[in-house]
Length: 364
Image (tube, rainbow, N blue to C red; front, side, top):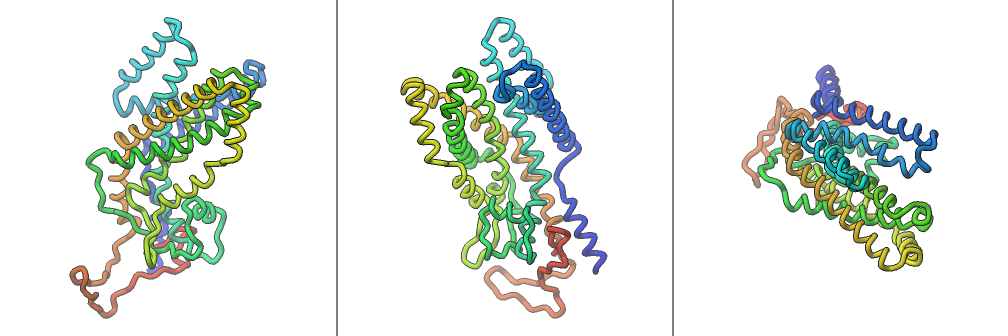
């Protein structure tokens, strides 16, 4: 029995939905990000750019690299080459550089964001569930446990051991409601960050308006990293069983991010200060661009995620549920729903013990 438990621990610890392609894509992103960071430092030290703010297009180019590969994988390489040809034509015919950068980062950067998010979801979904599941079984919580409890807003007195989800779910269409909800949450966070950062009076004084717009557009490109990873918990209705009602992880994550994303007083002060410096007409146009950019980024990334990636992700998650919840050799014999359970002698009952946890994972 002890050997079986050890084997189960190893299986739970290594439970990973990533394919070789996912691993290669994630490594490509990390490598590209390192190269872009080094290039940004070099340009800053060499005096090619005046400040770190102006290196943001270089740093964010890692998302474009991953997005190009992901775009070609989802469609065809000649579509990716066609897109690059359109960008080259715009450059040759004298289109503004900022417009070209907007197009490149909106399309390829958006694909890169979604590809990285899905890869991380495949790698971390069951690991996250296993750690949450073991929180109530440990006497002392480590920092990772506390971080998860904060992110998902998990109460201290809730028994996290009974974690369930809709493991028989299948997706046969694009979920319009969830797509709109994700877009709305991202828009909410994006507008808060736009006003909090871009209307800072010191930033308005230091840089031209077009550079501020480009900077904020690139920052907006990272908003889906704060929103999309949690959508899988809503799609599969991952929840902790409670005595009165279930605690849904997605709702807990949304509640947490709403609390930390709206610093009302600084936003109000920045808005008043920017209005005095820029004028109400310029300020209104700036906020209008913020709304437009946030809608464009969140709409494109949410549609790409739910239309092209989420169905395969859900199928992979539910197909491995039995690896996460192994079916015991001896199970309870139950009658129809609503009737009493038959008591079968010598039938083991499911129980939780701290000794059964491989670090954070709990074996059933």
